[in-house]
Amino acid sequence: MQDLHTLLEQALTQIGYEMVDLEISGRGKLLRLFIDKPGGVNIDDCALVSEHVSHLLAVEHDVDYDRLEVSSPGLDRALKKESDFERFAGSKVQIKVRVPVEGRKNFTGVLRGIDGGVVRVECDGVVQCFALGSIDKARLSPEF
Image (tube, rainbow, N blue to C red):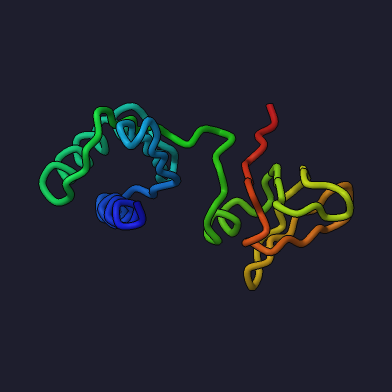
């Protein structure tokens, strides 16, 4: 899967998109690709990436799949890479850690950035620090 992930990430970067996430489910028969670009993505972007990836997988990488889904990551997009935590500093986030910190696994607050692999989140006026590797899930938490 890592080879596929790397292949898709490089291919999408070359055409101006960021691969936010790749999910493979149904014994590999469904490929779900989440993309983004500055200013957000629309249906035309998804169609363009779908066509590009379909051709790429048919020609360069023999992947057996039945369905490819391409979509935006949504307003509550997952944060996975260091660059995500840098880009969305100042945004409200939800963090779930693998091992409890002060008896808690779930934190909601304002992302204050990342430095040296340590994510800082301000929760109720207190800045909590989490090693990137200790985070199970992190998502934007949009306010309406």
